[in-house]
Amino acid sequence: MKVIHYTEAAGQTFNNETVQGVTGRVVIGGDDGAKNFCMRVFTVTGGGFTPKHSHAWEHEIFVHAGRGRIFRAGDWGDVTSGTVLFIPGGEEHQFQNTGSDDLVFVCLIPSGVAEI
Image (cartoon, rainbow, N blue to C red; front, side, top):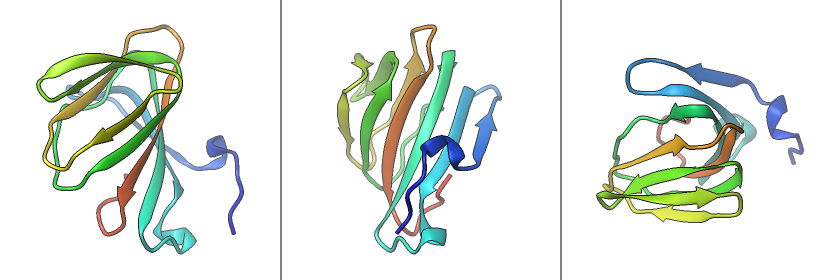
């Protein structure tokens, strides 16, 4: 069993032309013996954004804190603390933080793909 606060997991920060102000943390993954899923926590600073991308696997996402918007199915929609999202495999998506506080979300992916 593993019990931690998500901020105890090592973070990897991303900043380039396609992603700004994003820190990703693998909080449960293969190193923990998780055989089916990987749980990641992403923090997007005010004005930051994840890359617009798609991939074969689905995402299950829970917005823990902050507010922003999500690009999915060709359109933008608002997200706030407590929002739950399902993004099917193959669907282009992107998060943007539209507030000044951090946008923090939990993201589940299947095992066997890059964890971060």
